Length: 251
Image (cartoon, rainbow, N blue to C red; front, side, top):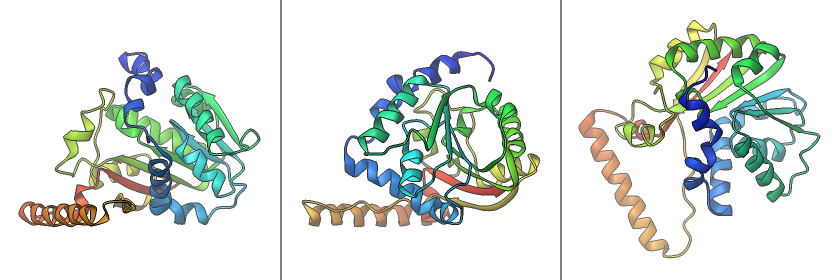
């Protein structure tokens, strides 16, 4: 990746941005893990536990926690931010994982890494593609294609530019460059010679109602009703308000 303001922003991504939105307790952390399972659990359950998996921009270790829980033993986790990697290791230890012989962390530039490494059964790219310019998106996806084994799988999570709430999340992060619709992400993947298996609005797990349950149920019902009304006025589905899109593609 070329040297520019983003390199500094990425290296300090946790301390300057992500720290303020990271889960603050066990319940919030578990909700993130449930979110992975809800959207991609079927894909991971179809793989051998010895499958070679690459997590691009691993961040604070959500996917690594999930994969260890599911019994996977060959995971490469890369990020350009050393502080993110250290936080990921800390979080895995906090979750009680013995991960040293199962997860290999590396602080590297993803473009350089993909040019030199291949043979992956699955590459996971969560919340990263949005940080690339359009030329970089196409180059990155092409490198992913080359790094996958035949019939290898690419899974993506990208910001949903179709949502009426898109600007609220997208522009909260200065490193965001490109938003995606179902059409544009399919276009990018086709250019990079991927076959798109699915492209959907991300599903989110329901909040567990604890304490003041009646008030929380009323709040949830009112919010649901308002979203339905607004969706009807805009001529879109309620699901279109999802913050992200989830995509599965095959080489």
